[in-house]
Length: 388
Image 1 (tube, rainbow, N blue to C red):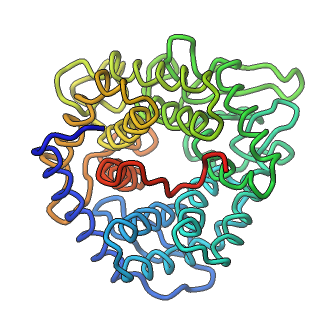
Image 2 (tube, helix red, strand yellow):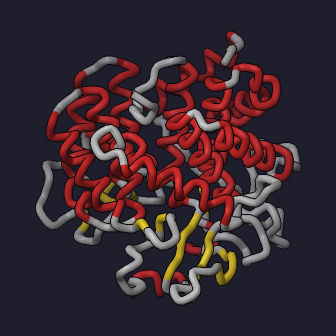
C-alpha cells in the first residue's frame, strides 16, 4: 500500500509507542509457574499471574514476536519466548481459543526463529484445536462435537445448542493453514469449514456476518443464528464482521481460491459501507443497538478491519482505491485518540458479555501492531500460512 509521508510518520511513531508499552509489560512477566496462567488485566493492559485458565498471553506473545522482527533486538525475542512458554499448557486444551494462541505464540515464533520446541508446541496446539472439528458437518465447533456442552458457558446467560459454531472459529483455525505442511488433512478441514460458513449462512450473500449458529445433532440442520455479544439476535455485533474479514482473507492467502477473495471483499465492503456511517472511524460495538449513541464503540474492530484491508491490498493493489482512505483514517484515529503514550489501545468492548463496559481488548493491541507492521514492512511474510 502506498503511504503518504505524514501517514508513514504516524505509523513509525505509533510503532515506537507500541514497543515502549510492550517492553514495559514484558519486564513484569515472571518465570513460568506450574498450574498458573498469564491473564490480561482488561482495565490497563498489564498481565497478572492467576490459577484460572486464560488464553490472553498468546496475543502478547504475537505482539512481541512482531516487534522482535521489526526492531531486530533480542530483548523482544527473549520476552516473546518466555510468554510463549507460559502458553504451553493451553496447547493441550481442545478449545477454540487454543487456535488463536497457537497462531500468534509458537507458530509465529517458529517462523521467525526456526526453533524446534516452538514447532512442537505449535503442532500440539493444532492437534488440540482440531478436536473441535465435526466431520459430519465439515466445520469446527465451539467445543468438541463428541463432548457435552461445557458448564462454563452458562455464566454468559445464553442457552447454547449442544452443537455450536461461530464466526470467530474460522480465525481460531488459522494455524491449521500453517500446519497442513506437516498434516495435509488440516488444510482440507479449513477449506471445508470456510465454505461451510457461507453454505450455512453464517456469512450472508450480501457480505453480512452473523455471530453464532446452533445446530441440531439429530438432524444436522441449523437451529438459528444468535449472538452472545451483540444487542440481540436481530442486530449486528461489529466484531463478528471483523472475524469474517480475517478468516476470509486467511483462506484466500492460503489457497489462492478466488471464491475466498470474493467473500473477503464482500465482507470488507459490508463493514465499510454499513458499519461506518456516522463520521468517526470507530464503529459502535453493535451498529443496530437502539440505544446508540449511548453505547461503547469498539477500537478493536478498527484494528482488526484495517489489518484485513491491508492484506487485501497486498493481494490486489487496485483495492487501495477502495480501502486506502479508511485504513489511513482508522489507524490515525486510533493513534490520535485511543492509544496511550505507552502504547495501550483503549476503548474496546466485549459487548453484552461484560455489561457494555469499555475494556483493553486482548485482540486490539495485537491487530494494531500487525497492521502497522504490515504497512512498514510491506511484502514481509512471517505467518507461514501460504502454500509452500
